[in-house]
Length: 152
Image (cartoon, rainbow, N blue to C red; front, side):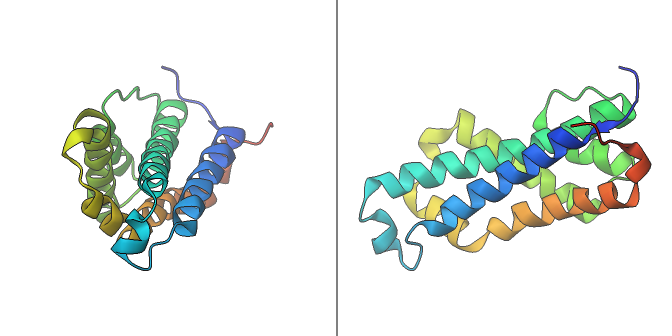
């Protein structure tokens, strides 16, 4: 791949997708486990929205790597490492992104092992990790406006 500019349109789309999915999770009854599980649709909505938010954060990182640095990354767990290597995110943010990638992989490949209680706890207590990962990439974007293709 030839390095070039990162698409502003794709950045905006993925960040909006992350925000939308997290907002949908926050609309769910997360005040108690009993409220959350009172309607099974809450569980399915939480799982779908969380997985989609995680996939969007990975796509955001993968797009930056591909377009700006010419790196094609196929494994989600590599995205954080490569972003750190290129100076896009810190080591702490890289570790966070690797954890998020691992959880996304669990959701897709080992979905049958994720219990309702675990999903509830993550939605109630850990969504800020997704926002922190997004914010780390936003900082790089803001610091490198010359790397962004502003064509919509």
